[in-house]
Image (cartoon, rainbow, N blue to C red; front, side):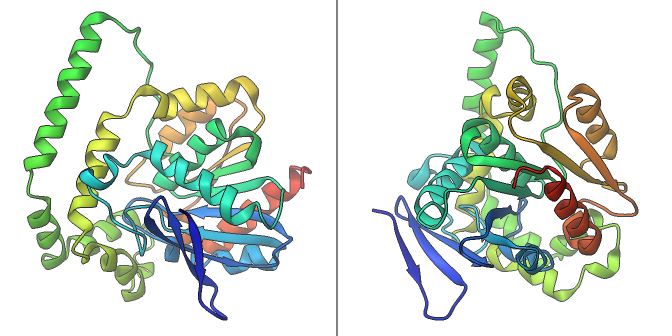
Length: 313
């Protein structure tokens, strides 16, 4: 049974989703327009610390949520949840809307995501189309690919690949990998690669990323993610999802991309915008993979003005 557990006077909450504890928070007026901020891989809702108050002041009811496997939410393994992919996280967001947001308002939801959170937002825009008002993806992973025609040979290969991936990740010592990641300072190296503005990589940010990795359940959850994301079907990949969304164009879609993004280069964002002309692309100069945290003032301003100009609120 799903339930909400809220501490007195605290904006942070735990929600029981299918037996898993999910951390979430909300700021802003309850009857304001609802917005959900979705973090990227390895991050948590705290990564939006420089954005949520701005949007609340602009009149939104701002929800942040730790996706299953991340932050302070439960970190289930394969035996607990089977796999973790953007389909599962979309289901989590769907139930969050139904059980946490809908008792307060019937207004459509604005989704803003960073990287993996953007893919989850796109998934929700397709499969929860009537619930979603608009999506801002900053940036969108899962670059466009031309889907090949299904053949019997391809199907056999895919089945073999899926089995092989499952075997590899079941035996691969992710516990040792995460131990070394912490001991060797690889998190700091990764953040310095993700962020173009190196001054933004401070101890607060490092702690936000490092804390969930130190939990005993981190490796088993990472294993479920590796298997889930590596073996998901085409219907959960960005190419298919964008194609589906392009048929209806019911959900306005903005791409915000860091000019200096080393993880997902800008040319991929341009490729998406050129292929899907209904998608709007705005480039943040001298910014890397986490534009919402590297240039929060500019990110917040562009996002708010774009939503405001939709004239659908």
